[in-house]
Length: 410
Ligand code: IMP
Image 1 (cartoon, rainbow, N blue to C red):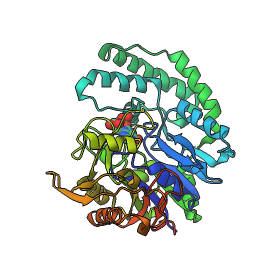
Image 2 (spheres, rainbow, N blue to C red; image 1 turned 120 degrees about the vertical axis):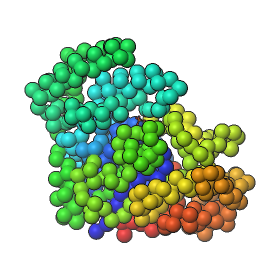
Image 3 (cartoon, protein in one colour; image 1 turned 180 degrees about the horizontal axis):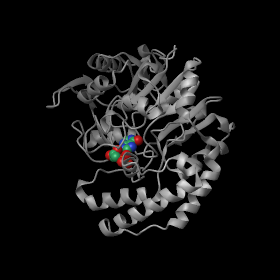
């Protein structure tokens, strides 16, 4: 029985949301295992746009169990808003279909204050974080002072941990970051209210997954961010604070590597990056602007414009190697329509390969053979460079704007 992991092969925003949504049809369980609401997955279902930051997109399909794993950092306010939003639109009718790991760490108001204040102080050298408190929450996790859902559920433990943390963080905020301090009582009361609403969703999700996998259920693991933003394997220090690569699935969902049979890398037909850091194929002129506007390249979380460039085959090949990808889903091919020629970066010392572009709209194509010959040559060339089979090509935001070449669940 195949369990499938979907991993970003670039700097995030590869269109994982759409692919996870498509593959969710064939899965019984959909798991989010790392990151937090720094991610934003945009989905278009029946013309209606939904942006999800924490809840796996399996929630948009009936009867899928959605799991937020132990490696996710959760801002409870954002999670509650997302639950409310989904319910209002007729999704998530059955509360037993959402489970949050009791070991997942909570993003606290001081994490957000520290994240934002540090970025301000870094000035030109800033990472360009999303300001959602992601880094400081993972720091506390590793420093063993973080607050997990299991701590929140125990009133005494929660109070003690929160007191200790606020005392320490207030000194840091005031003396080092020159920021406003935070009030224990109001945070305590707010989080107790969050607890009362979220309590019912908290579970031992690693045990649950183990049982379900043993029973033959099909699991889809949907990553956030991408390989080049991974804290170990990305463009450090311009990275996020978690493992977005395949290894993260094991540690951050609590399963063994043999429970994953397919590793599908998601890559755009070009490249984007949001935030600071190196970007060898970046296009700063008119071509970059065309990609930005045709591709609607504005962050789903922060609204920031994304930096755009040609396909970076060096980065993508690296992602294939680090993750041992078994297939590639190529997204947003339609955005390349209208370029006379398209470049692929072949080596880090820019070595451009130039291919012919195409003019006709391609979003209605059903088969690869429906595409203009130059578009077919472009995707086949990428497949060749990556030495990995293409499993799908996405040519628009809707579910039906997809050329499925191989379904990894079948
Ligand atoms: P953080 O994850 O908010 O700490 O941000 C660290 C870096 O990762 C910044 O460059 C962000 O722009 C980037 N980043 C974080 N999440 C995403 C994402 O979901 N898509 C793209 N970039 C992201």
